Length: 132
Image (cartoon, rainbow, N blue to C red; front, side):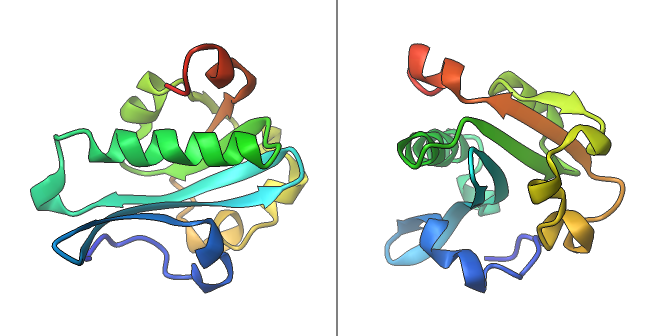
C-alpha cells in the first residue's frame, strides 16, 4: 500500500488495525498509548477503496480499542485529513497543548512534518454517542 505515511510502525504493530480485500492490505490505522492519552496515527486507505467509509470504520474500531485500553483522549497529526477528523469529533489545537508524552513520540518529534496540524478528541463522549 503506497500511502506516504511514516514507516516507523514496527514497535506499534500490535496496536494496528488493518483492512484486507482478497488477501491484500487496503487500509490501516494504529495508535501509540501513553497512559490515558493515545496518538492515533497512520490512517491510510488504498485509493481504489476511498469514499466507501472504510477509513471511518477503521477509525471507529480504533476508538473502541482505545476506550477498552483506558484511553480518554486521542491526538493526531495530519497534513491531509483535518476536515475529516473534525467531522469525527477532533478539534485543532496548538502543538504546545499536546501532553508531553505524546509530543515525545517519534512521529510527533520528527517523523511527521512540522506543517502537520495537531488535533485532539475527548473519547469519553464517544461512549455516549456510539464511537462516532
